[in-house]
Length: 164
Image (cartoon, rainbow, N blue to C red; front, side):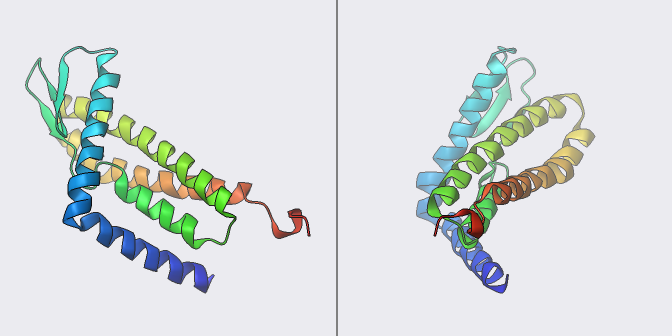
Protein backbone atom coordinates (compact mmCIF):
# COMPACT_ATOMS: atom_id res chain seq x y z
CA UNK A 1 0.00 0.00 0.00
CA UNK A 2 2.86 2.38 0.79
CA UNK A 3 4.43 1.64 -2.59
CA UNK A 4 1.13 2.44 -4.32
CA UNK A 5 0.71 5.72 -2.43
CA UNK A 6 4.26 6.89 -3.12
CA UNK A 7 4.02 5.99 -6.80
CA UNK A 8 0.59 7.59 -7.07
CA UNK A 9 1.79 10.89 -5.58
CA UNK A 10 4.95 10.87 -7.72
CA UNK A 11 3.10 10.16 -10.99
CA UNK A 12 0.39 12.67 -10.06
CA UNK A 13 3.03 15.34 -9.45
CA UNK A 14 4.82 14.65 -12.72
CA UNK A 15 1.60 14.71 -14.76
CA UNK A 16 0.28 17.88 -13.13
CA UNK A 17 3.61 19.66 -13.68
CA UNK A 18 3.65 18.45 -17.30
CA UNK A 19 0.09 19.74 -17.79
CA UNK A 20 1.17 23.19 -16.62
CA UNK A 21 4.12 23.44 -19.01
CA UNK A 22 3.53 25.94 -21.80
CA UNK A 23 4.26 23.58 -24.74
CA UNK A 24 1.87 20.95 -23.34
CA UNK A 25 -0.80 23.55 -22.68
CA UNK A 26 -0.41 25.09 -26.13
CA UNK A 27 -0.19 21.89 -28.17
CA UNK A 28 -2.29 19.45 -26.14
CA UNK A 29 -4.58 21.06 -23.56
CA UNK A 30 -5.87 24.02 -25.59
CA UNK A 31 -6.65 21.99 -28.74
CA UNK A 32 -8.24 19.28 -26.60
CA UNK A 33 -10.40 21.85 -24.79
CA UNK A 34 -11.46 23.40 -28.10
CA UNK A 35 -12.41 19.88 -29.24
CA UNK A 36 -14.52 19.42 -26.12
CA UNK A 37 -16.30 22.69 -26.95
CA UNK A 38 -16.94 21.54 -30.54
CA UNK A 39 -18.35 18.20 -29.38
CA UNK A 40 -20.52 19.99 -26.83
CA UNK A 41 -21.91 22.30 -29.53
CA UNK A 42 -22.51 19.34 -31.84
CA UNK A 43 -24.46 17.54 -29.09
CA UNK A 44 -26.45 20.65 -28.18
CA UNK A 45 -27.08 21.24 -31.89
CA UNK A 46 -29.06 18.00 -32.00
CA UNK A 47 -31.86 19.75 -30.09
CA UNK A 48 -30.95 23.48 -30.12
CA UNK A 49 -29.67 25.24 -33.23
CA UNK A 50 -28.94 28.46 -31.33
CA UNK A 51 -25.45 27.62 -30.05
CA UNK A 52 -21.99 28.13 -31.56
CA UNK A 53 -18.44 27.58 -30.42
CA UNK A 54 -15.23 29.43 -31.08
CA UNK A 55 -12.13 28.10 -29.46
CA UNK A 56 -13.10 26.95 -25.99
CA UNK A 57 -16.25 29.11 -25.79
CA UNK A 58 -19.87 27.99 -26.19
CA UNK A 59 -22.31 30.80 -26.92
CA UNK A 60 -26.04 31.05 -27.36
CA UNK A 61 -26.94 33.00 -30.49
CA UNK A 62 -30.40 33.55 -29.00
CA UNK A 63 -29.40 35.56 -25.92
CA UNK A 64 -25.61 35.97 -26.14
CA UNK A 65 -24.87 33.93 -22.99
CA UNK A 66 -21.49 32.22 -23.20
CA UNK A 67 -19.30 29.92 -21.14
CA UNK A 68 -15.62 29.32 -21.56
CA UNK A 69 -14.17 25.89 -20.81
CA UNK A 70 -11.15 26.74 -18.69
CA UNK A 71 -8.43 24.72 -16.98
CA UNK A 72 -10.11 22.42 -14.48
CA UNK A 73 -13.32 22.30 -16.52
CA UNK A 74 -12.10 20.09 -19.36
CA UNK A 75 -11.86 16.86 -17.39
CA UNK A 76 -8.09 16.62 -17.79
CA UNK A 77 -7.35 16.85 -14.07
CA UNK A 78 -9.74 13.98 -13.27
CA UNK A 79 -8.11 11.93 -16.04
CA UNK A 80 -4.68 12.69 -14.54
CA UNK A 81 -5.85 11.45 -11.14
CA UNK A 82 -7.24 8.26 -12.70
CA UNK A 83 -4.16 7.62 -14.85
CA UNK A 84 -1.87 8.15 -11.86
CA UNK A 85 -3.82 5.63 -9.79
CA UNK A 86 -3.91 3.03 -12.58
CA UNK A 87 -0.21 3.41 -13.36
CA UNK A 88 0.72 3.18 -9.68
CA UNK A 89 -1.34 0.07 -9.01
CA UNK A 90 0.40 -3.24 -9.70
CA UNK A 91 -1.58 -4.66 -12.61
CA UNK A 92 -0.88 -6.15 -16.05
CA UNK A 93 -0.25 -3.49 -18.68
CA UNK A 94 -3.14 -4.58 -20.89
CA UNK A 95 -5.53 -3.95 -17.98
CA UNK A 96 -3.92 -0.61 -17.21
CA UNK A 97 -4.23 0.56 -20.81
CA UNK A 98 -7.81 -0.68 -21.13
CA UNK A 99 -8.73 0.98 -17.84
CA UNK A 100 -7.13 4.27 -18.86
CA UNK A 101 -8.97 4.23 -22.20
CA UNK A 102 -12.35 3.34 -20.73
CA UNK A 103 -11.82 5.76 -17.83
CA UNK A 104 -10.91 8.60 -20.18
CA UNK A 105 -14.11 8.05 -22.14
CA UNK A 106 -16.24 7.78 -18.97
CA UNK A 107 -14.82 10.99 -17.52
CA UNK A 108 -15.18 12.90 -20.78
CA UNK A 109 -18.76 11.73 -21.32
CA UNK A 110 -19.74 12.93 -17.86
CA UNK A 111 -17.82 16.14 -18.48
CA UNK A 112 -19.87 16.75 -21.64
CA UNK A 113 -23.03 16.39 -19.56
CA UNK A 114 -21.48 18.82 -17.09
CA UNK A 115 -20.65 21.44 -19.72
CA UNK A 116 -24.03 21.25 -21.42
CA UNK A 117 -25.93 21.40 -18.14
CA UNK A 118 -23.89 24.39 -16.99
CA UNK A 119 -24.48 26.12 -20.32
CA UNK A 120 -28.23 25.92 -19.77
CA UNK A 121 -28.10 26.55 -16.01
CA UNK A 122 -26.16 29.76 -16.65
CA UNK A 123 -28.89 30.99 -18.94
CA UNK A 124 -31.56 30.16 -16.41
CA UNK A 125 -30.10 31.18 -13.00
CA UNK A 126 -26.62 32.49 -12.16
CA UNK A 127 -26.80 31.39 -8.49
CA UNK A 128 -27.59 27.80 -9.46
CA UNK A 129 -24.91 27.93 -12.16
CA UNK A 130 -22.27 29.00 -9.63
CA UNK A 131 -23.33 26.37 -7.09
CA UNK A 132 -23.38 23.52 -9.62
CA UNK A 133 -20.15 24.69 -11.25
CA UNK A 134 -18.10 25.26 -8.10
CA UNK A 135 -19.40 22.49 -5.86
CA UNK A 136 -21.53 19.76 -7.34
CA UNK A 137 -19.97 19.12 -10.74
CA UNK A 138 -16.39 19.49 -9.52
CA UNK A 139 -16.98 16.79 -6.93
CA UNK A 140 -18.89 14.53 -9.35
CA UNK A 141 -16.12 14.55 -11.96
CA UNK A 142 -13.50 13.49 -9.38
CA UNK A 143 -15.97 10.97 -7.96
CA UNK A 144 -16.37 9.59 -11.49
CA UNK A 145 -12.62 8.99 -11.62
CA UNK A 146 -12.77 7.21 -8.26
CA UNK A 147 -15.71 5.03 -9.31
CA UNK A 148 -13.97 4.07 -12.56
CA UNK A 149 -10.84 3.15 -10.57
CA UNK A 150 -12.85 1.02 -8.12
CA UNK A 151 -14.72 -0.76 -10.93
CA UNK A 152 -11.40 -1.31 -12.72
CA UNK A 153 -9.96 -2.87 -9.54
CA UNK A 154 -12.90 -5.26 -9.46
CA UNK A 155 -12.10 -6.59 -12.93
CA UNK A 156 -8.38 -7.08 -12.40
CA UNK A 157 -7.25 -10.69 -12.39
CA UNK A 158 -6.31 -11.94 -8.96
CA UNK A 159 -2.91 -13.55 -8.51
CA UNK A 160 -4.52 -16.95 -7.94
CA UNK A 161 -6.52 -16.58 -11.20
CA UNK A 162 -3.39 -16.32 -13.32
CA UNK A 163 -1.84 -19.56 -14.63
CA UNK A 164 1.47 -20.55 -13.08
